[in-house]
Length: 382
Length: 115
Image (cartoon, rainbow over all chains, first blue to last red; front, side, top):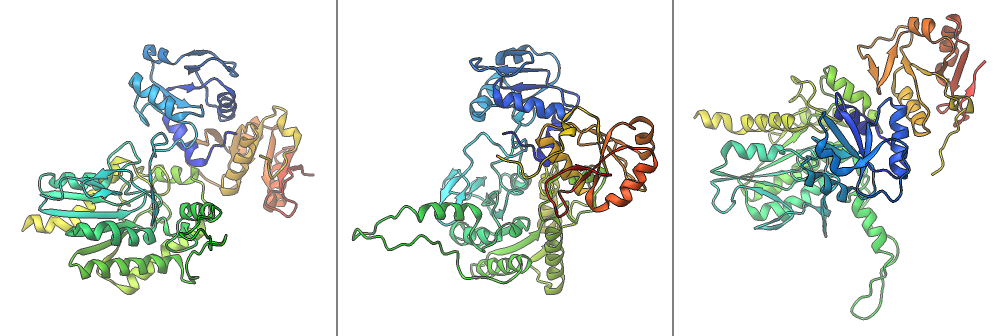
Protein backbone atom coordinates (compact mmCIF):
# COMPACT_ATOMS: atom_id res chain seq x y z
CA UNK A 1 0.00 0.00 0.00
CA UNK A 2 1.45 3.32 -1.06
CA UNK A 3 0.48 6.26 1.08
CA UNK A 4 1.73 9.80 0.39
CA UNK A 5 2.03 12.30 3.21
CA UNK A 6 1.82 16.04 2.73
CA UNK A 7 5.52 16.56 3.41
CA UNK A 8 6.40 13.81 0.95
CA UNK A 9 4.13 15.33 -1.66
CA UNK A 10 5.78 18.71 -1.37
CA UNK A 11 9.19 17.08 -1.63
CA UNK A 12 8.10 15.02 -4.68
CA UNK A 13 6.73 18.09 -6.47
CA UNK A 14 9.85 20.13 -5.77
CA UNK A 15 12.19 17.34 -6.86
CA UNK A 16 10.57 16.82 -10.24
CA UNK A 17 10.10 20.48 -11.08
CA UNK A 18 11.45 20.97 -14.63
CA UNK A 19 12.85 17.44 -14.59
CA UNK A 20 11.90 14.13 -16.10
CA UNK A 21 10.59 11.72 -13.48
CA UNK A 22 11.86 8.17 -13.71
CA UNK A 23 10.67 5.41 -11.43
CA UNK A 24 12.98 2.66 -10.22
CA UNK A 25 10.77 -0.40 -10.06
CA UNK A 26 8.44 -2.30 -12.35
CA UNK A 27 6.37 -4.43 -9.98
CA UNK A 28 3.04 -4.10 -8.21
CA UNK A 29 4.26 -1.35 -5.94
CA UNK A 30 5.62 0.71 -8.82
CA UNK A 31 2.28 0.33 -10.59
CA UNK A 32 0.47 1.67 -7.51
CA UNK A 33 2.84 4.59 -7.40
CA UNK A 34 2.21 5.41 -11.06
CA UNK A 35 -1.56 5.49 -10.46
CA UNK A 36 -1.14 7.79 -7.47
CA UNK A 37 1.14 10.12 -9.39
CA UNK A 38 -1.36 10.21 -12.26
CA UNK A 39 -3.97 11.46 -9.80
CA UNK A 40 -1.53 14.21 -8.98
CA UNK A 41 -0.94 15.04 -12.67
CA UNK A 42 2.65 13.88 -12.35
CA UNK A 43 3.84 11.95 -15.36
CA UNK A 44 6.35 9.14 -15.07
CA UNK A 45 8.53 9.16 -18.19
CA UNK A 46 9.53 5.52 -17.84
CA UNK A 47 10.53 2.89 -15.32
CA UNK A 48 13.93 1.35 -14.81
CA UNK A 49 14.83 -1.84 -13.03
CA UNK A 50 17.49 -4.46 -12.56
CA UNK A 51 15.02 -7.33 -12.25
CA UNK A 52 12.33 -7.91 -14.85
CA UNK A 53 10.83 -11.09 -13.45
CA UNK A 54 7.62 -9.50 -12.19
CA UNK A 55 6.55 -6.64 -14.44
CA UNK A 56 3.23 -5.01 -13.54
CA UNK A 57 3.64 -1.52 -15.02
CA UNK A 58 2.30 -0.78 -18.46
CA UNK A 59 4.60 2.12 -19.36
CA UNK A 60 8.01 1.94 -21.01
CA UNK A 61 10.67 0.07 -19.06
CA UNK A 62 14.45 0.21 -19.41
CA UNK A 63 17.43 -1.27 -17.69
CA UNK A 64 18.67 0.80 -14.75
CA UNK A 65 22.04 1.30 -16.45
CA UNK A 66 20.28 3.17 -19.24
CA UNK A 67 20.23 6.12 -16.83
CA UNK A 68 23.88 6.62 -17.80
CA UNK A 69 22.67 7.53 -21.28
CA UNK A 70 19.86 9.85 -20.22
CA UNK A 71 20.54 13.30 -21.63
CA UNK A 72 17.75 15.35 -20.08
CA UNK A 73 17.59 16.49 -16.47
CA UNK A 74 15.91 13.77 -14.50
CA UNK A 75 15.02 12.62 -11.02
CA UNK A 76 14.65 9.03 -9.90
CA UNK A 77 12.21 7.85 -7.27
CA UNK A 78 12.69 4.38 -5.88
CA UNK A 79 9.48 2.35 -5.86
CA UNK A 80 10.77 -1.01 -4.70
CA UNK A 81 10.86 -2.63 -1.30
CA UNK A 82 14.61 -3.04 -1.10
CA UNK A 83 15.35 0.68 -1.18
CA UNK A 84 18.84 0.27 0.20
CA UNK A 85 19.90 -2.04 -2.62
CA UNK A 86 18.41 0.35 -5.19
CA UNK A 87 20.15 3.32 -3.55
CA UNK A 88 23.48 1.50 -3.72
CA UNK A 89 22.88 0.76 -7.40
CA UNK A 90 22.04 4.38 -8.19
CA UNK A 91 25.06 5.64 -6.28
CA UNK A 92 27.26 3.23 -8.22
CA UNK A 93 25.91 4.78 -11.40
CA UNK A 94 26.98 8.16 -10.06
CA UNK A 95 23.71 9.60 -8.80
CA UNK A 96 23.51 11.47 -5.51
CA UNK A 97 20.89 10.86 -2.85
CA UNK A 98 18.44 13.75 -2.50
CA UNK A 99 19.98 15.71 -5.36
CA UNK A 100 19.27 13.06 -8.03
CA UNK A 101 17.19 10.39 -6.37
CA UNK A 102 15.10 9.56 -3.34
CA UNK A 103 12.67 7.01 -2.08
CA UNK A 104 9.06 7.73 -3.10
CA UNK A 105 8.03 6.69 0.42
CA UNK A 106 9.36 9.05 3.08
CA UNK A 107 10.60 11.30 0.28
CA UNK A 108 12.33 13.57 2.74
CA UNK A 109 15.82 14.59 3.57
CA UNK A 110 16.44 11.98 6.23
CA UNK A 111 18.48 9.22 4.70
CA UNK A 112 16.25 6.16 4.40
CA UNK A 113 18.93 3.85 3.15
CA UNK A 114 21.48 3.63 5.91
CA UNK A 115 21.35 1.90 9.25
CA UNK A 116 20.90 5.05 11.18
CA UNK A 117 21.00 4.22 14.83
CA UNK A 118 22.47 1.93 17.46
CA UNK A 119 20.46 0.36 20.24
CA UNK A 120 21.09 2.31 23.44
CA UNK A 121 20.48 0.92 26.92
CA UNK A 122 19.40 4.25 28.43
CA UNK A 123 17.96 6.11 25.48
CA UNK A 124 16.53 3.43 23.22
CA UNK A 125 18.68 4.44 20.25
CA UNK A 126 21.63 6.71 19.53
CA UNK A 127 24.08 7.85 16.83
CA UNK A 128 26.03 5.07 15.16
CA UNK A 129 29.46 6.70 15.13
CA UNK A 130 32.46 5.07 16.73
CA UNK A 131 34.60 7.93 17.96
CA UNK A 132 37.62 7.93 20.23
CA UNK A 133 35.40 8.44 23.27
CA UNK A 134 33.08 5.60 22.35
CA UNK A 135 29.81 5.42 20.52
CA UNK A 136 26.88 7.78 20.47
CA UNK A 137 28.39 11.14 19.49
CA UNK A 138 29.83 12.65 16.35
CA UNK A 139 33.03 14.62 16.83
CA UNK A 140 34.42 17.32 14.55
CA UNK A 141 38.05 18.11 15.28
CA UNK A 142 40.21 16.48 17.94
CA UNK A 143 38.98 16.79 21.52
CA UNK A 144 42.41 15.82 22.86
CA UNK A 145 44.21 18.73 21.24
CA UNK A 146 41.40 21.29 20.82
CA UNK A 147 41.73 24.59 22.70
CA UNK A 148 37.97 24.90 22.95
CA UNK A 149 35.31 22.19 22.91
CA UNK A 150 31.62 22.70 22.32
CA UNK A 151 29.02 20.01 22.90
CA UNK A 152 25.62 20.11 21.20
CA UNK A 153 22.40 18.47 22.30
CA UNK A 154 19.06 18.38 20.52
CA UNK A 155 16.93 16.43 18.07
CA UNK A 156 16.81 15.92 14.33
CA UNK A 157 17.31 19.60 13.60
CA UNK A 158 20.83 19.21 15.02
CA UNK A 159 21.42 15.54 14.14
CA UNK A 160 24.70 15.21 12.20
CA UNK A 161 24.23 11.90 10.47
CA UNK A 162 20.85 11.69 8.85
CA UNK A 163 20.99 14.30 6.13
CA UNK A 164 22.83 14.73 2.86
CA UNK A 165 24.19 18.09 3.99
CA UNK A 166 26.16 19.62 6.83
CA UNK A 167 24.53 20.03 10.22
CA UNK A 168 24.79 23.40 11.94
CA UNK A 169 27.18 21.76 14.44
CA UNK A 170 29.64 20.94 11.67
CA UNK A 171 29.22 24.43 10.18
CA UNK A 172 29.89 25.94 13.60
CA UNK A 173 33.09 23.91 13.88
CA UNK A 174 34.23 25.27 10.52
CA UNK A 175 34.56 28.74 12.04
CA UNK A 176 37.62 27.55 13.99
CA UNK A 177 38.62 24.20 12.55
CA UNK A 178 42.18 24.27 13.82
CA UNK A 179 41.47 25.12 17.44
CA UNK A 180 38.03 23.77 18.15
CA UNK A 181 36.32 20.48 18.62
CA UNK A 182 32.56 20.19 18.35
CA UNK A 183 30.90 17.14 19.89
CA UNK A 184 27.40 16.52 18.61
CA UNK A 185 25.18 14.37 20.80
CA UNK A 186 21.94 15.48 19.11
CA UNK A 187 19.85 12.59 17.80
CA UNK A 188 16.70 12.62 15.68
CA UNK A 189 13.63 12.29 17.86
CA UNK A 190 15.28 13.21 21.17
CA UNK A 191 13.33 15.51 23.45
CA UNK A 192 14.85 17.53 26.29
CA UNK A 193 14.37 14.47 28.53
CA UNK A 194 16.72 12.38 26.38
CA UNK A 195 19.12 15.32 26.36
CA UNK A 196 19.34 15.23 30.17
CA UNK A 197 20.38 11.57 30.15
CA UNK A 198 22.72 12.13 27.22
CA UNK A 199 24.34 15.05 29.03
CA UNK A 200 24.99 13.07 32.20
CA UNK A 201 26.27 9.96 30.48
CA UNK A 202 28.02 11.13 27.31
CA UNK A 203 28.74 14.86 27.53
CA UNK A 204 29.87 15.65 31.09
CA UNK A 205 32.66 13.02 30.99
CA UNK A 206 34.11 14.80 27.94
CA UNK A 207 34.27 18.08 29.96
CA UNK A 208 33.54 20.50 27.10
CA UNK A 209 33.91 24.26 27.61
CA UNK A 210 30.36 24.93 26.46
CA UNK A 211 27.17 22.90 26.12
CA UNK A 212 24.43 24.10 23.77
CA UNK A 213 20.92 22.69 23.67
CA UNK A 214 19.09 23.66 20.48
CA UNK A 215 15.68 22.11 20.97
CA UNK A 216 11.99 22.30 21.77
CA UNK A 217 10.12 20.65 18.91
CA UNK A 218 10.16 17.08 20.17
CA UNK A 219 8.94 17.59 23.72
CA UNK A 220 5.23 17.48 22.83
CA UNK A 221 5.73 14.10 21.13
CA UNK A 222 6.14 11.97 24.22
CA UNK A 223 3.51 11.25 26.78
CA UNK A 224 5.93 9.98 29.43
CA UNK A 225 8.93 12.08 30.46
CA UNK A 226 12.29 10.33 29.92
CA UNK A 227 10.70 7.52 27.90
CA UNK A 228 10.56 7.93 24.13
CA UNK A 229 8.26 6.00 21.83
CA UNK A 230 10.97 3.60 20.70
CA UNK A 231 11.75 2.68 24.30
CA UNK A 232 8.09 2.01 24.95
CA UNK A 233 7.94 -0.21 21.89
CA UNK A 234 11.12 -2.01 22.89
CA UNK A 235 10.15 -2.65 26.49
CA UNK A 236 6.68 -3.80 25.56
CA UNK A 237 8.37 -6.46 23.48
CA UNK A 238 11.02 -7.27 26.08
CA UNK A 239 8.66 -7.78 28.97
CA UNK A 240 7.10 -10.69 27.11
CA UNK A 241 10.43 -12.48 26.81
CA UNK A 242 10.46 -13.72 30.41
CA UNK A 243 14.19 -13.44 30.88
CA UNK A 244 15.22 -15.59 33.86
CA UNK A 245 17.49 -14.45 36.67
CA UNK A 246 20.51 -16.32 38.12
CA UNK A 247 18.21 -18.65 40.08
CA UNK A 248 16.29 -19.68 37.01
CA UNK A 249 13.22 -17.72 38.00
CA UNK A 250 11.44 -14.90 36.26
CA UNK A 251 9.74 -12.47 38.57
CA UNK A 252 9.15 -9.76 35.99
CA UNK A 253 5.52 -9.36 35.07
CA UNK A 254 4.14 -8.23 31.75
CA UNK A 255 3.65 -4.61 32.62
CA UNK A 256 6.21 -1.90 32.01
CA UNK A 257 6.91 0.98 34.36
CA UNK A 258 7.32 4.38 32.69
CA UNK A 259 8.02 6.26 35.91
CA UNK A 260 5.78 8.33 38.17
CA UNK A 261 2.83 10.13 36.62
CA UNK A 262 3.56 13.74 35.83
CA UNK A 263 0.91 16.42 35.50
CA UNK A 264 3.19 19.21 34.31
CA UNK A 265 2.73 20.61 30.84
CA UNK A 266 5.17 19.92 27.99
CA UNK A 267 6.26 23.55 28.16
CA UNK A 268 7.08 23.31 31.85
CA UNK A 269 8.88 20.02 31.23
CA UNK A 270 11.14 21.62 28.62
CA UNK A 271 11.97 24.50 30.96
CA UNK A 272 12.60 22.14 33.91
CA UNK A 273 14.96 20.00 31.86
CA UNK A 274 16.95 23.07 30.87
CA UNK A 275 17.25 24.00 34.53
CA UNK A 276 18.39 20.48 35.39
CA UNK A 277 21.00 20.47 32.61
CA UNK A 278 22.23 23.92 33.55
CA UNK A 279 22.62 22.89 37.20
CA UNK A 280 24.57 19.78 36.31
CA UNK A 281 26.83 21.65 33.90
CA UNK A 282 27.41 24.39 36.48
CA UNK A 283 28.55 21.81 39.03
CA UNK A 284 31.36 20.92 36.64
CA UNK A 285 32.17 24.53 35.66
CA UNK A 286 30.81 24.09 32.17
CA UNK A 287 28.90 26.91 30.51
CA UNK A 288 25.40 25.88 29.45
CA UNK A 289 22.93 27.62 27.14
CA UNK A 290 19.59 26.48 25.78
CA UNK A 291 17.94 27.88 22.65
CA UNK A 292 14.24 27.34 22.05
CA UNK A 293 14.32 26.78 18.34
CA UNK A 294 12.43 28.45 15.48
CA UNK A 295 9.68 26.56 13.62
CA UNK A 296 7.09 27.43 11.00
CA UNK A 297 4.35 27.28 13.63
CA UNK A 298 5.10 30.71 14.98
CA UNK A 299 7.67 32.12 12.56
CA UNK A 300 6.83 35.10 10.39
CA UNK A 301 6.13 33.19 7.20
CA UNK A 302 6.92 34.45 3.72
CA UNK A 303 5.37 33.06 0.55
CA UNK A 304 7.60 29.97 0.31
CA UNK A 305 7.23 29.21 4.02
CA UNK A 306 3.47 29.53 3.68
CA UNK A 307 3.45 26.98 0.89
CA UNK A 308 5.47 24.49 2.95
CA UNK A 309 3.19 25.12 5.92
CA UNK A 310 0.12 24.43 3.80
CA UNK A 311 1.47 21.08 2.59
CA UNK A 312 2.60 19.91 6.00
CA UNK A 313 0.33 17.57 7.88
CA UNK A 314 -0.58 19.21 11.13
CA UNK A 315 -1.48 16.63 13.69
CA UNK A 316 -2.25 18.58 16.82
CA UNK A 317 -1.34 21.94 15.26
CA UNK A 318 -3.19 24.02 17.79
CA UNK A 319 -1.50 22.10 20.65
CA UNK A 320 1.90 22.73 19.13
CA UNK A 321 1.27 26.42 18.72
CA UNK A 322 -0.02 26.62 22.30
CA UNK A 323 3.04 24.74 23.59
CA UNK A 324 5.37 27.09 21.71
CA UNK A 325 3.61 30.16 23.07
CA UNK A 326 3.72 28.75 26.61
CA UNK A 327 7.46 28.14 26.43
CA UNK A 328 8.04 31.66 25.12
CA UNK A 329 5.96 33.02 28.00
CA UNK A 330 7.93 30.96 30.54
CA UNK A 331 11.22 32.20 29.11
CA UNK A 332 10.09 35.83 29.46
CA UNK A 333 8.63 35.31 32.91
CA UNK A 334 11.56 33.40 34.42
CA UNK A 335 14.19 35.52 32.69
CA UNK A 336 16.90 32.91 33.18
CA UNK A 337 20.18 33.91 31.56
CA UNK A 338 20.85 30.39 30.26
CA UNK A 339 17.63 30.07 28.23
CA UNK A 340 17.09 32.07 25.06
CA UNK A 341 14.02 32.36 22.88
CA UNK A 342 15.39 31.76 19.37
CA UNK A 343 12.02 31.37 17.66
CA UNK A 344 12.54 34.56 15.65
CA UNK A 345 16.07 33.75 14.46
CA UNK A 346 14.99 32.86 10.94
CA UNK A 347 12.22 35.46 10.58
CA UNK A 348 14.22 37.48 8.06
CA UNK A 349 14.47 34.55 5.66
CA UNK A 350 11.88 32.84 3.50
CA UNK A 351 12.10 29.38 2.00
CA UNK A 352 14.64 27.84 4.37
CA UNK A 353 12.23 25.30 5.85
CA UNK A 354 11.24 22.17 3.96
CA UNK A 355 8.76 21.12 6.61
CA UNK A 356 7.53 22.76 9.78
CA UNK A 357 10.75 22.29 11.73
CA UNK A 358 13.64 21.29 9.47
CA UNK A 359 15.88 23.41 7.29
CA UNK A 360 18.42 22.51 4.62
CA UNK A 361 22.09 23.45 4.69
CA UNK A 362 21.54 27.17 4.09
CA UNK A 363 19.25 27.27 7.12
CA UNK A 364 21.88 25.40 9.15
CA UNK A 365 24.44 27.96 8.03
CA UNK A 366 22.28 30.78 9.44
CA UNK A 367 21.76 28.90 12.69
CA UNK A 368 25.52 28.34 13.06
CA UNK A 369 26.07 32.01 12.30
CA UNK A 370 23.58 33.10 14.97
CA UNK A 371 25.15 30.79 17.54
CA UNK A 372 28.65 31.96 16.67
CA UNK A 373 27.68 35.62 16.89
CA UNK A 374 25.88 35.04 20.18
CA UNK A 375 28.91 33.52 21.89
CA UNK A 376 32.00 34.60 20.09
CA UNK A 377 31.68 37.72 18.04
CA UNK A 378 32.33 39.98 20.98
CA UNK A 379 35.28 37.83 22.04
CA UNK A 380 36.72 37.95 18.51
CA UNK A 381 36.51 41.77 18.47
CA UNK A 382 38.35 41.90 21.79
CA UNK B 1 -6.03 -2.07 5.22
CA UNK B 2 -9.64 -0.97 5.26
CA UNK B 3 -10.57 2.65 4.75
CA UNK B 4 -12.51 4.41 7.46
CA UNK B 5 -14.81 6.04 4.99
CA UNK B 6 -16.74 5.25 1.85
CA UNK B 7 -16.80 7.38 -1.21
CA UNK B 8 -19.85 7.86 -3.34
CA UNK B 9 -19.27 5.61 -6.36
CA UNK B 10 -20.22 8.42 -8.71
CA UNK B 11 -16.84 10.02 -7.96
CA UNK B 12 -15.07 6.96 -9.30
CA UNK B 13 -16.48 7.46 -12.75
CA UNK B 14 -13.80 9.70 -14.20
CA UNK B 15 -15.83 12.86 -13.72
CA UNK B 16 -14.28 16.28 -13.12
CA UNK B 17 -14.11 16.84 -9.38
CA UNK B 18 -13.63 20.21 -7.73
CA UNK B 19 -13.07 20.72 -4.02
CA UNK B 20 -14.69 23.92 -2.82
CA UNK B 21 -12.35 25.71 -0.42
CA UNK B 22 -8.66 25.51 0.43
CA UNK B 23 -8.31 24.95 4.14
CA UNK B 24 -7.15 22.18 6.43
CA UNK B 25 -10.29 20.09 6.05
CA UNK B 26 -10.29 20.43 2.28
CA UNK B 27 -6.70 19.19 2.41
CA UNK B 28 -7.80 16.10 4.31
CA UNK B 29 -10.57 15.56 1.83
CA UNK B 30 -8.06 15.71 -1.00
CA UNK B 31 -5.94 13.05 0.72
CA UNK B 32 -8.97 10.86 1.30
CA UNK B 33 -9.71 10.92 -2.42
CA UNK B 34 -6.06 10.52 -3.40
CA UNK B 35 -5.64 7.44 -1.25
CA UNK B 36 -8.43 5.86 -3.27
CA UNK B 37 -6.91 7.01 -6.57
CA UNK B 38 -9.68 9.49 -7.25
CA UNK B 39 -8.40 12.40 -9.29
CA UNK B 40 -9.34 15.91 -8.22
CA UNK B 41 -9.45 18.43 -11.05
CA UNK B 42 -9.03 21.66 -9.12
CA UNK B 43 -9.59 23.56 -5.90
CA UNK B 44 -12.04 26.42 -5.96
CA UNK B 45 -11.56 29.43 -3.75
CA UNK B 46 -14.61 30.11 -1.64
CA UNK B 47 -16.49 33.36 -2.00
CA UNK B 48 -14.36 36.01 -0.34
CA UNK B 49 -11.32 33.70 -0.06
CA UNK B 50 -8.01 34.93 -1.55
CA UNK B 51 -4.82 33.19 -2.43
CA UNK B 52 -1.72 33.93 -4.52
CA UNK B 53 -1.21 30.23 -5.15
CA UNK B 54 -1.86 29.18 -8.72
CA UNK B 55 -1.59 25.52 -7.77
CA UNK B 56 -2.37 23.59 -4.63
CA UNK B 57 -1.14 19.99 -4.43
CA UNK B 58 -0.34 20.38 -8.10
CA UNK B 59 -3.98 21.14 -8.87
CA UNK B 60 -5.28 24.37 -10.37
CA UNK B 61 -6.71 26.94 -8.03
CA UNK B 62 -9.75 28.49 -9.64
CA UNK B 63 -12.14 31.25 -8.73
CA UNK B 64 -15.88 30.99 -8.33
CA UNK B 65 -16.22 32.82 -11.65
CA UNK B 66 -14.08 30.23 -13.41
CA UNK B 67 -16.05 27.45 -11.77
CA UNK B 68 -19.23 28.96 -13.15
CA UNK B 69 -17.83 29.45 -16.65
CA UNK B 70 -15.87 26.26 -17.19
CA UNK B 71 -17.00 23.60 -14.75
CA UNK B 72 -20.78 23.65 -14.73
CA UNK B 73 -20.94 19.85 -15.05
CA UNK B 74 -18.24 19.08 -12.50
CA UNK B 75 -18.94 17.41 -9.17
CA UNK B 76 -18.18 20.02 -6.54
CA UNK B 77 -17.46 18.76 -3.07
CA UNK B 78 -18.37 21.01 -0.16
CA UNK B 79 -17.81 20.61 3.55
CA UNK B 80 -20.65 19.31 5.65
CA UNK B 81 -20.19 21.96 8.30
CA UNK B 82 -20.89 24.81 5.88
CA UNK B 83 -23.00 22.94 3.38
CA UNK B 84 -26.08 25.14 3.71
CA UNK B 85 -24.24 28.36 2.94
CA UNK B 86 -21.82 26.94 0.36
CA UNK B 87 -24.57 24.89 -1.27
CA UNK B 88 -26.65 28.00 -1.79
CA UNK B 89 -23.75 29.92 -3.34
CA UNK B 90 -23.03 27.11 -5.77
CA UNK B 91 -26.68 26.55 -6.56
CA UNK B 92 -27.01 30.23 -7.40
CA UNK B 93 -24.28 30.03 -10.03
CA UNK B 94 -25.85 27.00 -11.61
CA UNK B 95 -23.79 24.14 -10.20
CA UNK B 96 -25.99 21.06 -10.20
CA UNK B 97 -23.71 18.29 -8.94
CA UNK B 98 -22.96 19.19 -5.36
CA UNK B 99 -21.48 16.51 -3.15
CA UNK B 100 -21.49 17.09 0.59
CA UNK B 101 -18.71 15.49 2.56
CA UNK B 102 -19.74 14.35 6.01
CA UNK B 103 -16.50 12.89 7.36
CA UNK B 104 -16.52 15.78 9.79
CA UNK B 105 -20.16 15.30 10.78
CA UNK B 106 -21.97 12.76 12.90
CA UNK B 107 -22.53 10.16 10.22
CA UNK B 108 -18.89 9.90 9.47
CA UNK B 109 -17.63 8.08 6.49
CA UNK B 110 -20.09 8.52 3.68
CA UNK B 111 -19.95 11.12 0.96
CA UNK B 112 -23.48 11.51 -0.31
CA UNK B 113 -25.13 13.65 -2.91
CA UNK B 114 -26.71 16.73 -1.38
CA UNK B 115 -30.05 18.09 -2.41
